[in-house]
Image (cartoon, rainbow, N blue to C red; front, side):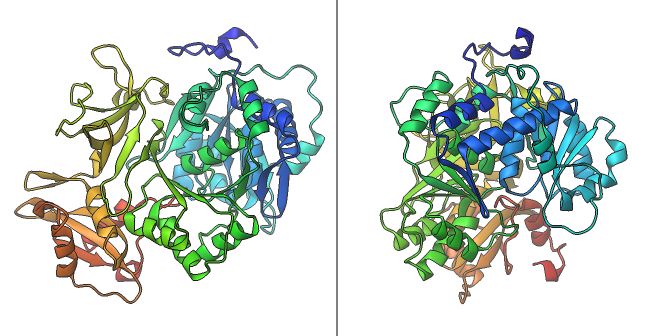
Amino acid sequence: MTEKRCRRAGSPASGSGFSLEAALAAVAAAVPWRTAVISGERRVPFVELDERAGRFARHLREAGVRPGEHVAILAFNRVEWLEAAFGAWRAGAVPVNVNYRYVAGELRHVLSDADVVALVAERSLVGRVAEVRADLPRLRHVVLLEDGSPGPAALPGTDYETALATARPAPTEPPRTCGDDLYLLYTGGTTGYPKGVMWRQEDLFHVALERRRPGTPRAAGVDDLAARARSAQARRMLVLGPLMHAAGQWNALSALLSGLTVVLNTDRRFVPERVVALADREAVHTLQCVGDAMARPIGEQLLAEPHRCPELTVVTSGGTPLTPTVREIWRSWRPGITLNDSYGGSETGVCGASQSDSADTARRFTMGASVAVLDDALRPLPPGSPQIGRIARTGRIPLGYYNDPVKTAETFPVDAEGRRWAMSGDFGTVAADGSITLLGRGSAVINTGGEKVYPEEVESVLKAHPDIDDTIVVSAPDERLGQRVAAVVALAPGRRPSDEQIRDFCRARLAGFKVPRRIHVVAEVKRTAVGKQDYRWAAAVARGTVPSGER
């Protein structure tokens, strides 16, 4: 390959030779027989993961996939997801994550928008792709993953294991990869069709994947990763988030490139009893989850079976912070357990860690030096400022959105001093000590009589109520105020607090205009595949447009 491939317009040359596939190869050489991935009954050592990724890279090249072209992965959590991703990177191609919950129209958009030329998909999931195949003229190669579904596949393709078994040794050197090569992550966001966030691989590694102790310098190259892997304890992380989303994918990649073992939850439904059984059976040390929706039922299950998971010492949550109530559940099970919250997003990487604890319902985070709260002129607010601003990151940030210059300009603006910022979409305030309190997304803010209410702030208070299991706060129409605060809540088993009791609880902790005027009780709060609130469903509940059977 020429040098041009490793130099993208507007990005600095890395010069380090770093890439994600090279990082895996270095770790595999350092700890070849350490278990890399546990996926169902399979236990895959690093040397096998690396070798199979290489075979898949050779298959892609034999199939005519060229460096820089895009390969989509449509699958549930399984080791082949990771093999295919590393194989695509090794071939010089770009893997594209695809949500397995998408309907045909959404699949058409992502596969077309991403200019996908090859698809790796589970047999049971290709039916929806077959519905839109005629609208995907660039798609020229399909690889099928067996998942036990009966009958012929709805879309013809090459069997994945056959592809690996018949891949010939590479006749020439594989494409040279480096830190400037593309990492592409499609993210749904809160509105509209998914967008592809483009990162340089080296930038993404340093802001989302690298694990290092405080005071330890950043890895200068893959040799440093190999040395760290050799000295690392053989610890296991249970990844509950889907690999198709940032939280699950980044935690899995981060663990692997640190020489740790990734335990994948291969169930297609989240069942707390099965999660606890898996964590216990595989003696996991760290549990990765997404907020209360996962952490609470698992914690309650462990309280019922306190002898389980003796090795589990760390719970890490991303996407939405753990509430004080859920933290207390976990500490009731194991007082010394470490509970880590992280703040970040697809456009910003991991920005900071939570300071919230005990009865503190504020969502407060210690952020890195590259993160700030900006005013309307993109100027960082000083510590202790009472002003609400937009949380953003500068420095190592994405190149932009793939195929969307308009959204790129909106989300990655340049300030008066020439600095590019990645806007998180969240609003917050900066305290005197420099910590940032997260208020919530501007797109969901409620304007009630001229006062702005951030739903996440109200949700954190409601979740602290001992009688409330889960909640989503949304706006509802109000003739006098324009909008009113409405809460959709699921109650704890056997608890029946009155609406006024809930409001009294909120009044002691929130300004009056933030207290929910309407409270809608449902059997279960609906969430997305990664445990985030389904605001569209909640808004329909608040407006009375959801059938009673779906509440």
